Length: 100
Image (cartoon, rainbow, N blue to C red; front, side, top):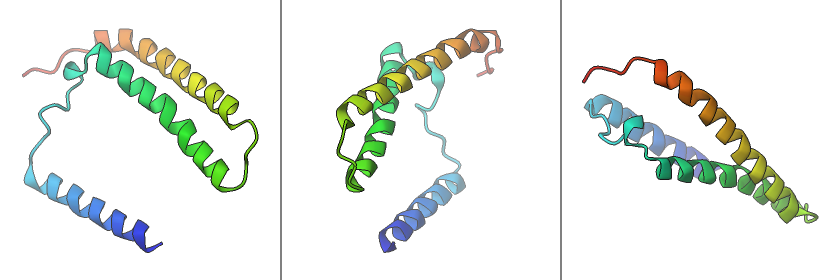
């Protein structure tokens, strides 16, 4: 329990310092997101979610069918992410660009 509180305090302190500094990340723009990076983000999300679920299942004694269920969850997450991204893509094309 102590580790979680420490991590939360450190995160809050760093977030507060960042917001107070007025700095903005220079690379935090969707225009810098290449198709390769977007694909990498989609794969990372598709794998991270079922991986965390299955680590939890494994830690609590669930040992059957972990690999097959992991594969199904990862495929479902990836497919859903692709559907959402490519549904939003045409909608983002009609939004006016922010002036620089």
